[in-house]
Length: 362
Image 1 (tube, rainbow, N blue to C red):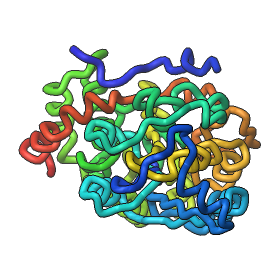
Image 2: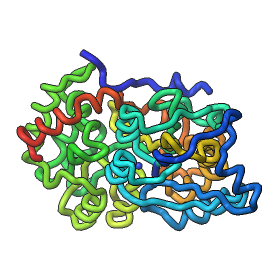
Image 3: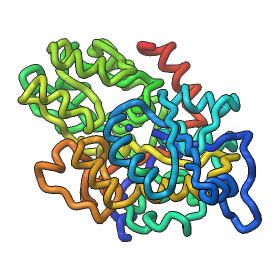
């Protein structure tokens, strides 16, 4: 039985935004020089770089990520906003002139499978050498890195659960009709299928026992949430005691319920990786690679972490204990994460979605 993820990532440590390119743009010249950027630099006009990303923390990205890069490289950054699916579909349809695209690894794998990303020249991205190995090539060495790694664990209100929550298996025993679970179509949906397989006692992923286990849990689930805001609102109103959620949102839960807890389950929390890539056909490929290098820089990574926007993958970032609260930070933490095989997930997600809708909650 094929494993769905790899574990023990500490050996690899020895060393939730997406980058896409226009599919109808000009090619680079024989020396690899960016034609459009070269012409604009010569004329003094800024080069337009189109970035496809999510809509969160827009002020932070504008001030701390985009503006310094624009000034340094004589660039005008144009941002396209939307969720993963919306933005990927625009690239598929050829209705987007994106150069750089931020996508979760699940959606980025789909783009790779469909030939929508350009390969990267790692020599043009020297900051790759400063990030955790797990982040360098999450979907293959030819494609873009993960610029941030979050973790999916369990948050809960101790006043509403029957004992301390420490493991994925506790979802089946510590909650009484007050549990929220990710929808199967959410980023964390495939992770919960895998967690159910673990809770059923399987060392290797077993689809049948995973779905049997999820069906057992269904009567305790108040909501299969697709938007994190749904979870946060229900948690604050004590409509739920908790459930799986990304660590980056825990600060919002704790603001509503000060005694709330977040745990990395004993079987391992899941790595949630957001990638940054160059879209095939971009006429600004080298500039896009410069931007990816900037996104991985210690300066940007530290600022993002301290602002609680993104967890850092740059190993040179140092945070105080206070700054690290709510951030997936440090080699020890990163090394214990479970990583799904996104190629395997994409092969089976349609089947899992249909089965979930038929057998469980839809």
